[in-house]
Image 1: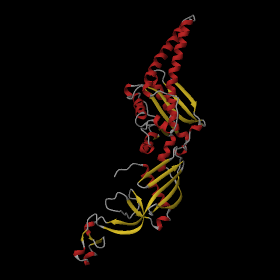
Image 2: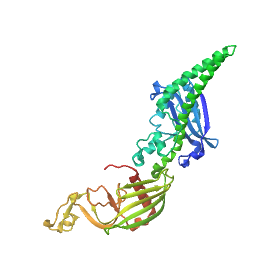
Image 3: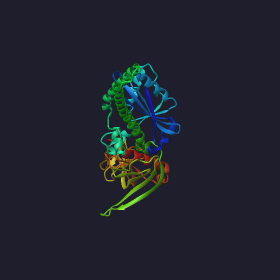
Image 4: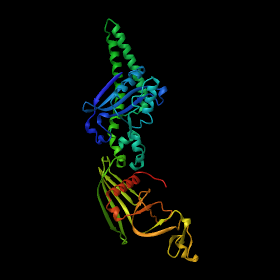
Length: 399
């Protein structure tokens, strides 16, 4: 087994990694195998990125032959000591279950059993449509962030390359053994030996480069976490204001503007428009523009069987109060007519956040709440509302 280490430039890190924990506690991992099923395939390479002796470092544990698999697992077991958080890209679906099965098959303890896990793939998955990408494969996301790699192979192609490597490496070891056993140096045998060695090195370079590019790419994909951080990490409310626009037809439209400073800058600016609301994020500055509705809305009572509807007044009245109204001026209220009307200025909400709730009609999926003077002077409630709007803008919802 070989262990290869090389430094990773700090300039490649453009994400505030302290949001994930202490640098010394973090461990990135990616594996290379000869198949998807752990029982019938070979684990031949475990790549890691960690913070060692004040520097980010790539460490690769490489099996030069299939019988070194247990040695590979043992080296990774010791390397995990002292680490608290395991980071990977789609490792929940492949790398970690594969490693667990390999450790169990060799009668070994799983080293990351008690470690926290962060799957970058899982974190970015809810925002696939928002980012406009075809799929969430690692190479696709690297292209999204304009990350280039030297490696041109995929994991499937490397299976045969590893098999060729094992064969060539075994041949090289045999040639070395024969040469050492010979008392004379044969130029022909020496040439053959060097040719095999060059082949071994070339194949090994391809295998290690692919994994190193995967590890470097994963490290550079950390800024993708900034999209989920919009909701997971605290923001700072920096300004609240109003916007008034007069349309060419003379209609006056008003919006509430909420500015936030987010915890980690987005790798790409974001613009989202949905249901009349707009989200704009540049680096770590976010602007929410939410339309205000000024006018009359309806508050619906749920217990409509206890109400009469008064058509002349276009309102519902509880039966205990409406007994004085003559029968010809009242009807039994239905769910759609059991309401009172109120004039005011309202903000939309797509889940129940603030009460009382108002609607334009019973079947309107958009809920509204009144923008009261108390709410205008409550930064805590406005921040809560901003997070609600962020969540609505960032996720697809079905109603």
